[in-house]
Length: 204
Image (spheres, rainbow, N blue to C red):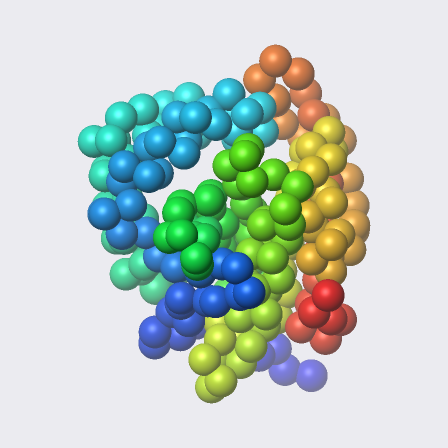
């Protein structure tokens, strides 16, 4: 059997994505104040699991810089990171972030991650966002999707909330990377790998 040709990005990225409560869309410069406010209010919680809040979005000006880098990423044929903002459809409030990254064109594969502001924790926001993004990821490009074959989520084993999101979104635990990376204040941590494929995923 011959290998399929490498995955290529769609002519137009299939965004925004609308779910019951959320709009998943690309960042805009008018989001800078909301991005800064959300990160600044939740910085200590985020940095437990992701290092970027230590050096990024430390001011509204830096938030504009971040957004500009995000906007430029959307122009690349194969962006290292395709950031997507999670927006409350009713209020227009910025709630957190998700996206696609670590593209492997030969495998038709990408990875996703997520975070949400603490005052909206335990409302299923991240789960809803991941389900919406996964559905678009697996939709054929001819039908307005990303046309991917496989998706992964990686998170710290100690990050129980993130693991629950992956499971609720229909991803399956596939393995553990032992003592995989350093978590500030916690030491060396295991990473969990969750995955799903277009042939096995069922929308929860």
